[in-house]
Image (cartoon, rainbow, N blue to C red; front, side, top):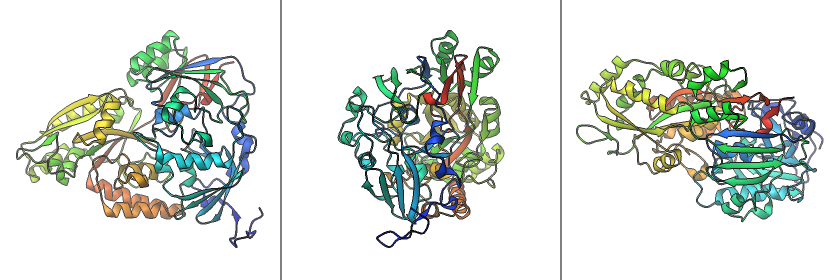
Length: 541
């Protein structure tokens, strides 16, 4: 449609301009199929297989069941979104080859016409409509993807290859959000998660087809020879769960796997010196943080001498923050692979605030604050977290507990398997918890961490202690409807500063991800979202 052409309903249409897109890339819509085919796809399919050593294989093959990095990366080999957020965080066309704004709240997507599902069924706009309709209905989900669709008021298939999305207001992050939702067949809308796990419903449009899945053990797929994007680099992909970092390293050196994710920092120097191994790092985009129970008068693992919850006092929470030497964590515990975190999103991510500096380390002031708060004798506090879920998580937690003990707190640490930990943390069975959020733009981190918890709106999804500040919510909601980037970023900065002043969530360090491979893998394009995806790896020779 030409620029300025008037539609039948009297609305002026225009091609989406760079100023309206979150990334401001002027050539994005012109890239189309050629751009996708030119990234991560080799000229011809060969018979080579690639074996990954994973911290965890997908918890399900249902792409709408659990919003988890361990699921979203591997499953994107079978299923695809309409817009792709690539390994460096840029947006690319995928199942949609172009898009435009018809009004400030109406988006129209032109879908690819040469796409078929693995069973030969043609891909149409109806598949997108039904996929988005299914997302909030998946039963027993530990983490729905509704956060990515909360801005949408309606989704309509104009015809087989045109999709129209009406948002509740201007939605500057819509493209980034749609990039996180994978498309299934319309006929699979009513399929249960078990049908996907068995492979019966795991039929996508992606470069690989479902082959085998054993929860907690292995996830396998094979090349989709009819993929619209061309030939893929590997004929067979095997992802094997090896939860212990040292065991993944051993498996790589023994030749049992070709590439591993989340290299233990203790093994990194040794692997870097090995001429048979290649290392592929990403820039920091994961935020390690602590969340504190600021709401309850009595908390199960935080107890002052009078039996109350000392974390209710902002002076105590600030003392906990001042006691942590974040620079030491980044440089020593993380072997120089981390960055001390003074805000919720890593430097360089869209919307992070460069004016927010590194937080203070002042144990003397921390002890003084405990005196002011009436807990000079200290109090008992157990920090709960994981071991082996995120790089060096246990070592970071051990160091934090030591920092707290130095200011007189009777601090203890308890680590649990990730599945147990997440379930119990969501039920608020703890008082201080450790977490990690990953994302390519600041607004995503902030929305998950500091907004009042509202699962239906996709707000505060990791805000497990129900922290709430109406001023934070107001700034965030305005930011999520502000199309102009500078104004939007000012609002995000305002929300971040308000939340930081409450000390309910303590950002600790920013961490990147690392992959290591044998020489059979020529390169791996490290994903900013810590996702492990076979098409990002290319075979040697």
